[in-house]
Image 1 (tube, rainbow, N blue to C red):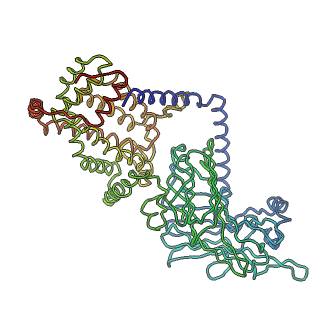
Image 2 (image 1 turned 90 degrees about the vertical axis):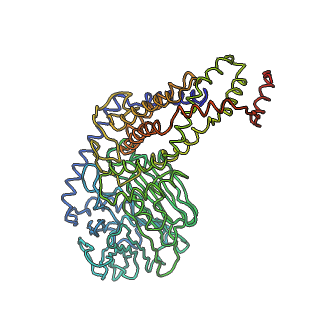
Length: 640
């Protein structure tokens, strides 16, 4: 690491600190944010009261008085043959299996709420992916008058899988392998100057829930619609959007992890930016689109393909209830004929690697395990070992300890090589100091380098032997950095003082402090503090072992500053990650003491002294020759 690199790190740190100070909110902004949060809490209390009134699945609120007045003003001219379905009462049907609960509404025939039965929010309430009007779920197309029709405004009629009309029922998949329900939006026709239902012309949504599965089959059947939908239409749009409810303790990490993933039919999985609002138009055939949150996802999957799509993300920065808006509009292929069957499915469930992988659709690529070698390490090494240990039903803190021990055991030969190299360099320290004294001047830098390299070669020491093993360990460290924050297995799992290993642990929450909050947070993470302290101790011990005297003056300061800088970053990260790095430091200390017994430095010193006494012809490498040539061009002419 040269002076420019150190200067670069220092400048980055200054910029981060300056940006954090400038971006910290004023007292007026904090007051306004608190007032807004109070308003949100009041709204939540009102919503909770309304939910109590509607728990019986059948809404007691008649929306024909207020909502229909607004609705008719909006769609009176565009309702066309669906005018019969513009008036009605909201009614709900519950469809559920052992792990999933769907709430379906006749208003728009849509899924208006999804609950995952085996999970809770951080605060212990039922985990609902979306609910009410926070999601969009509708068809949009042009009718024969070239007017826009949106199915979300109309009232569908529900039927069970035997064709029997439903009226606010609850269907539970207790026996059998699947259960289906249909919602039909009938066109209307006139008979004897009266408006009646045309049973031969309708849009049908058919939902099929399977036993112990997060996958929902969804079919759209267009029957007798060839005279309703514009004949020149080759596709119709389906809107599938979600305003993500906050589920976790750390809302910032939750926002940063929420985005839209998608997969083309014949291409790899891609995603929109997680850190900024994005909009993207997809023109190729698409297999699936996932509205992905930190630990859960809602995916729409085509049996065949979607023609195109428009994707949008928008961050809800100051909202304590909703973290991000994820919107998608997909194009469904359409032909002007009597019957069109558009088949697709939904996945509503956890971002669990093996669960997603079992569907063989590359849905597991939504879990950010890292790119390239970092992702390979997680997919093919860490996750299998982690899952194997998980079978023994032991605490996840112990599993992380065992995993750390196994990783260090695999890296033991590399660590041994690193220590052995540092021991050789420590033995050569007096000789290096002599060379430094012999060539103190700046213009003698090339001579000093030649003398140092000659010493290394004569003593049989490779100065790079300690660097390569450290580089080999780096991919594992980075892989762990991606694995622990993305691992749903750690969600709400406690260990020692940490009540949730997937987010930060806190031994003291000190509240709002200007400038400090923007850099460090409003709490103290003990695991992060322990990690930082042990890293600083390791840096000190390692420097003493290396015994290097030719470091630049700022190098040592920078080596101690880095752990302190990381303290602010890791303080808000997964407690499991800080715990893992802390364990890594402790085990490294133990290895160092083991190596002291294994490696006999006196014997090693005798071998090096014996090598130094040999006559070795020092041949100049091509690189060294080029260095000398460059030095000559600058006026340095070393003696032969």
